[in-house]
Image (cartoon, rainbow, N blue to C red; front, side):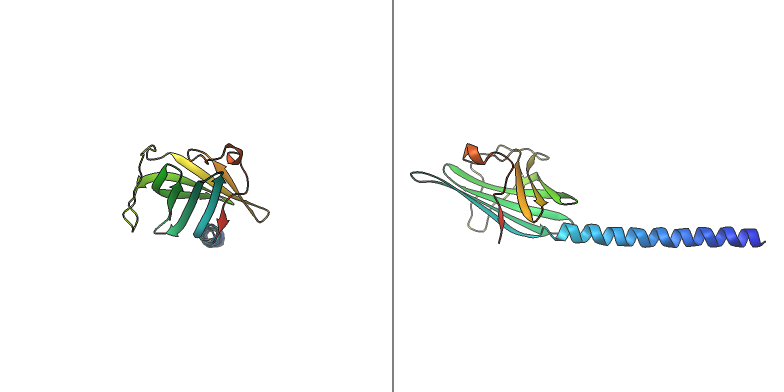
Length: 151
């Protein structure tokens, strides 16, 4: 009888510890995800008068999503993405096109659902951009580096 009680107690203790671990792990993961919520901007300029403005608005709605607006030289894009996070990195995965409050929408539809558009990564307090299917206007900005700033 005491052997059954001991086995029950050990199993019960293990279950409680496992549940506590899952709760702590989940809250840590959620705080990492929500740390990405906010607005990010990046501007490019090429003489004499070519500009490109990138705005990303990351928000939470039963998961992370983002609106990406790209305006500039021969460009007008309005992209809605799902945001996948992993530790100190997020990935913007194309979901659909959208029309903004001013009635602007994408001029040239070139993305398919599931396309990875870009990635942001936090390294030692610096926000690093890795371009994937969204490509910057200037080729020298096409390499992973510090481009976006959080507003």
